[in-house]
Each structure stands twice: as C-alpha cells, then as structure tokens.
Length: 352
Ligand code: G3I
Image 1 (cartoon, rainbow, N blue to C red):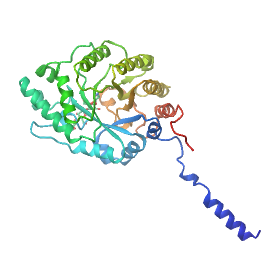
Image 2: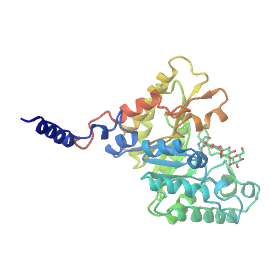
Image 3: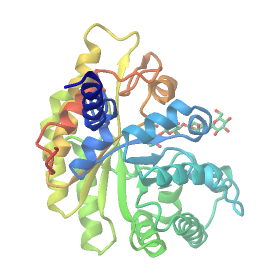
C-alpha cells in the first residue's frame, strides 16, 4: 500500500476515534452523581460572592443541583420597613439558580433572628401581627410561586429543652403562629413544599421528640406541612450518633413527611488538628449515607460550600474549615467522601 494511502487511512481512523479529551477528567461533579440517583445535593448561597466571584458561581453551578437562599429572604433583608420590600439580592440568587438548572429553596419566612426593628419593637396586637404575617408571607411566597419549590416556613421555634421558643411571633400570636404561617404559605403557593427547619433536633433527644410531636399535631390538624429540615451544624465526634439520625429520619418519614439535611457543616478547631480533615470526611460520609439510605430523605445541603464564605469563623471563634471546599475552592477530603457516597451504588441508568 502506498505511503500516501497509509497516511490517509490513519488520518481517517484518528478522526473517527472518540475525542478522549471530551471525556471529563477526574470524578464526576456531585450534581451529576446526585442527578443519577434522583437526589438533591445543595448548598446555601449568599449574594455578594455570587455577584463578584466567578469561581463561586462556577463551582456552585458545576457541583450542585439545589441551592438555598441563605440570607436574602430573611425578614430583615427582604422586608426592612413595614411598607417596603427589597427583593434585589433574592431575585439575583433565585434567577441564577433557575438559569443553571438548580432547584431553589426559600429560607426562611419566620425566625426569631434577623427581624427588622419595626417588627421587633412594634408592640402589635394579635390581630395586627397576624395581618403583618399574612401580608409578608403572601407577598414573598407569591413572588416566587413556581420558582422556589420548597420553603423553610418556620425556623427554630423549639428550644433545646423541647419547649416553645420565646419569640416576637410566639408572644404576639401564641403557639398557633406556626399553623397559621404554614396555612398562609400554602395559600400563597399550593405547589410549594413547606418545611419546618431546626438545629439540634437531628438525633434522638428532647428537642427532636418535641419537633416530632409538633409536626405530628400539625398533620392531625390538617396543616399543610410536607417536610422537616434538620440543619446539622456539627463538630468532630458527631459520627457517633449517625444511627440516631437514621432513627429520627425514619420516624418522621413514617408520619409521611420528607426529611432534608438543610444546613450541614462540620466545624473544626483552628488550626485543624492532625487527621481532622479525615474525621470531618467520615462525618460527611456517615450523615450523607444515613440520608441516602432513609426511606424519604431527599436533599443533603451544606451551609455554604467554600470555607472562604462560611458563617462559622464569625459565630464560633477559634473554629472554621467546616465545608467541602477550602478557601481556594479546592475540594477537601469531605468532598471526596461525598463524591464516593453519591457514586456508591450502581447508577439507575446504564453508562456506556
Ligand atoms: O447585610 C448586612 C450588612 O448590610 C451590614 O453592613 C452587616 C453589618 O454586620 O450585616 C449584614 O447582615 C449580616 C447578614 O448575615 C448578611 O450577611 C448580619 O449582620 C449577620 O448576623 C448575618 O448572619 C447570618 C446569620 O444566619 C443570622 O443570624 C449568617 O450569614 C447565616 O449563615 C446564618 O444562617 C443561619 C440560618 O439562617 C439558620 N440556621 C442557623 C444558621 C447559622 O446561624
């Protein structure tokens, strides 16, 4: 065969060969692994880095199929004055999520923190408070109807002891403010999934018992509640109660409620002691597995995703490094653990 023919044949063969460079290098992004399982892997998002840091936006869109609006939908941020709402940052985050194919969680319609002065100091009557509550929920939820698929309606209403938390709403309306808020949110968007969200109620304890009883009562009264968010802000040693988490999720699922891990982070003493990143990864693995193995745990969401923008150092002096990506957006052992866990079982589809 003439040399020119050999060269032509080789060229044709090379052109037909699959473009190896088109194959992704390294592990698949978390969102792709999660999508294959019909599972949501998410992170909370704040507006400033999303607007100003391309790397923040890039990693968020590549790795996650769900985002929670961290602060921009809180009462003081979105309703700073009685007759003024400010949706600029929330709109930006929600639009970014939807444009990049992420599901969007709204956080949070009612909370004892981040309340504007006009509300906290208003001394309103019960009827006035209910009217304010109704206006707030209607205005905020209707704006994102069909775009925010799930809401943390009430956040942290229960004390560690299991009693009602003393708050503006509890004092003004009484404990039925919770039922009212859920009914108002459902009226504003009948398709949205409505969650009760809290911290310290992940394992089996007085608080999680009280949350269980509260949501059981809500279901008995026909209140439209669809799920419970377990925040799970933890530190080293948490792996010890992963089985309790599994039990708690199962009993909530048995009520017919979804569970989501909504604000996961594992704070480390700084500088991190030897092997602490490995222990942190192990906690990620165990808690994610408890959710994946549960009958109806539908999302695993970290509170932020890079140590560069974590709430921890500011709120827990001497702690930090709580998230799957470091300050330079490099994946940490916790990320690898999540990737392995999400990829653990055979994917639902044949991968050719
Ligand atoms: O936006 C103002 C800014 O205008 C002002 O200049 C600045 C002055 O400090 O404050 C800014 O507001 C801050 C806000 O975050 C937005 O960045 C508040 O001071 C600050 O207190 C607030 O912290 C947030 C905290 O909730 C509120 O208590 C954290 O970022 C946020 O991560 C944290 O998230 C909560 C969840 O919502 C509920 N579960 C617990 C979790 C941790 O507390």
